[in-house]
Length: 477
Image: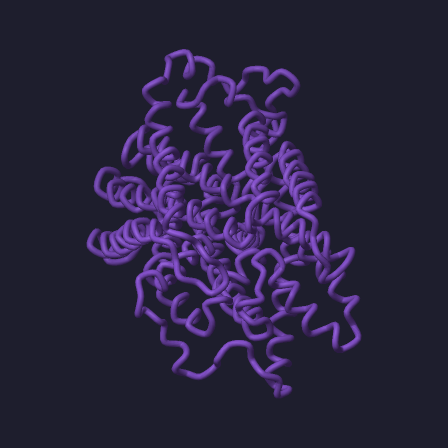
């Protein structure tokens, strides 16, 4: 029996960054203009920082497989834990088509920059990318983690830094900005509720730091590496997201931004007139690699937690099967099938509207999970004070309640406001269908795990044998 491969602080930080950062979010956040700086600062204090701090304390206190599932189970019980991991998994299912669309558009731009992208081509490339990411993860964390790290360097960090550099050159050379850049424009417009609601998409673009906690038990020196990795990845996320989003908005008018190709639009808009348009194709290939790496981490993260839940018999035996590398085979295959069906939406609906609706629905579901996580950390500090934590949120129990309480209230408030259609220049949504559609999807997701818990049978737990044959593959260590 071989010991599991260890993950270094740097690799974990890069995996964290690839979980949160993606080119697919830059055009949408860039559409908020210079006020994005203030909004990100606000969301960092009220949401991103609490998530990082709470994840760090829970991660070093309970660094075992399961992540959020284990934390909520220890703090609030198995039923709440099932709801938490169900929300974490389902939110990513409705998010996948947005990032897959970016993959498809990047592949199309690699062939013909700026051209019209056939919906069927988008669908074909999206499915190919997602099934590749699924099958690659069958070999386990080490293989996917290595690929993800390199894809992040080439396909996310490099293109975003290039976009930021181009935006700086664009402004310094005296060219006009597509958005106002006066100091007063940093002040957010909160004159209407619908206008404020649009900014809540930032929740989705600052989420995910806790996902790699399922791998904390494989980190070298977790007492030092976990908080360090969270800090490093947090800084990278904020810098890349804010400056990357603004680089899109500076060079491409908001009304012309396409959520799937916005970042590539920047390069096409600037490089073509300079006679080096061929570089757009190179950047499109890099962006494609970055998106594939982004997807690969998400494909394995939440499903790993479901595998741990399967050991407790909380999911049917069919979903308990694993590959030789220990990956949850049937959960990942089910996930790939559901995502394939959702991708069909891209054939018949306005992509900007689909992008935003899917972003909102995934954000709502995720906020339920975060609320449970914030409550769990408070419960565990009270119920399990004897558990050694090399990192603790300072200030004792009052300090913890302040951090987790602010995070929980922010989540609840954001969740409620997301039922209201936003007023945005780049996307038009009607309240006649937006609120009912979002409401039905949200309720369906939330009620399903409670139904599963009622249907739970003793045989589910009895079949959760980690040494049991999986059929085609045998589970290995």
